[in-house]
Length: 152
Image 1 (cartoon, rainbow, N blue to C red):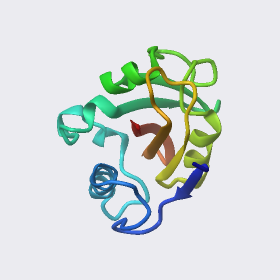
Image 2: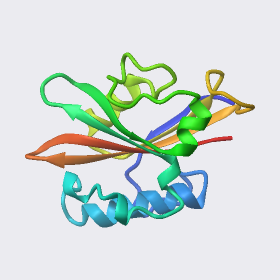
Image 3: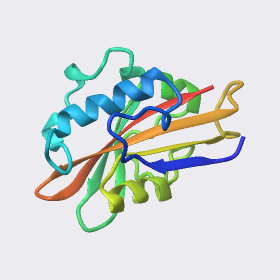
Image 4: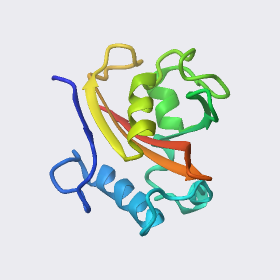
């Protein structure tokens, strides 16, 4: 399988995303966004996430001026698939995390970003990793990244 990546501009997504789960998360983000360029970081509320999604979510904080990312929440399905937790670690220092380049693309473009690629670093029998990175803002800058990811 080749690497597949795209900034999402289609509302609502139809052929860009591989499953109903990804589409539901994208619609969740679009709903939080409303007519704004990006949803406010206060919309990142675990109590409002679709119930199926919580084990597959990762929340990262974007540190101002540093373009570094600190992982704050990692769902159980991701912890099991990856084999480690990367809580309170900088993404560029964490093992088995979404490559920083992918996070950078999302922050610079200020748009949702989807990618899938072959995986060799996860535990278990997984061959594919797919992720939807959703940016949230505060004071005009991207301050949080919510990633929905699945391994297959």
